[in-house]
Length: 579
Image 1 (tube, rainbow, N blue to C red):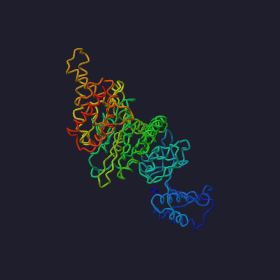
Image 2 (cartoon, rainbow, N blue to C red):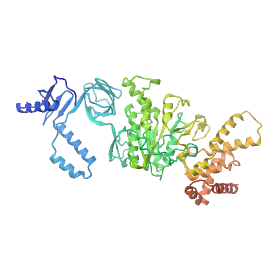
Image 3 (tube, rainbow, N blue to C red):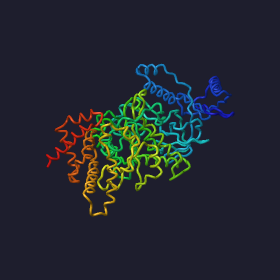
Image 4 (cartoon, helix red, strand yellow):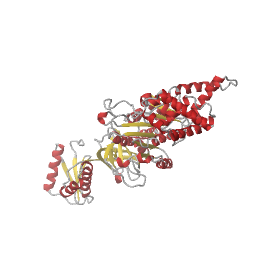
């Protein structure tokens, strides 16, 4: 309830003057409500047919037809959300419902522009609360000051003028959630933008909620396979982990994310892709590619495009995270991709500067670290008592000229459980995914790998590091001994085997076969440019002639020496026949 000064007067607006008895009733009601004597003045007005409007301070009691209808609509919406047998209850409500004397706190717009509105008079507004402006435009409180509040707007601000009325809703910003969102493209407000009609929501979740506590979590110990050999072997991602994908523009960051989504087919994982500040045409093309691969059957796209206002881009990742939490708390596994958080930080910087917040380093506000930490901490592997669901986060960050020490990249690196760094030089050499082995790391490590994969990986990272070092020192040498030449051939073969086309993920068994063969130096006799073609043919040979081997690898707890020898023998048999 608004705080009232001692001389506050109430104003009654109606078409006809109330009787003395009615005026006495209003005075009694207000005096009891505000615990002081209140004077009521009548103002003739034809704006409230079939009722009246009572204003005192910032509180409004709307007893017009429109006000009563709004109360009834909110009541029916509540019943629809909270009652199973809702139709009889709705009918009973319509026939027997009586409006209540509910005060709505009303404010006034002081300034509006660039997606920001400054409002006075909302003394009890809270951070993150939804406000209703002219023409039903929604906004969210982002700045609380002594005499006014700053609000971000989610729609076109043109209808809002200085002096316009603003209503509090008492509701925190949120998004509708439900199983029917799977396979759809929505905006950050939960509204469908794919032209396929409305979506039936099962619940409504706030876009910001506390991250699970330590007791509510369990260790990350199950793999979230990407289908990319370079990542699954050396930088494994676990369900519930936060792994950063970082690199310059056009180095294949989104490609890794989309390959990971494609690889979840048939694995009972719900995928959520949050596009922030991207071209609408790029998102449409991506949706089409995912449909062609059958991946939209388990994927939700949350799109805040480059043409959307900064407030919409700001709430997008939080809205996507709330959708993910809905499935996680049902015990399901979720993969969520934020593409990308660099643009998200820029949108937040724009809002903060427009809200007159003090700029800090690179003009970002002081709480820009908290901006992303409270988002990424919501990714977790929940305890069995809470259903055992998980949400794995793959945030994407764009660097400038490979500078991982810039402000936003270092912030997010310190929040996440590892990073996959994509290098421009490797990308232009044709090494795709262009993963820099030296700068990439997964802090979960082998805990997120199967024992068979861990054993198959062996000394891969060490061998690649030795090859890169040797390659640098042999650039200026023309006379090399046979041992060095073989080591270089072996290293080049490893780099080649790690190349992979987009939308061509490997199964876990195929990855183990390739690793065993590569580390067993099977590909040394094969010309470097033919290694990828030969490896594909070899996997086809395994599928055609030894189907049982994949099942044995899958069922084996670890990679035994006998199984390794059998894989190498079959690979050598294939190469001998190929000649």
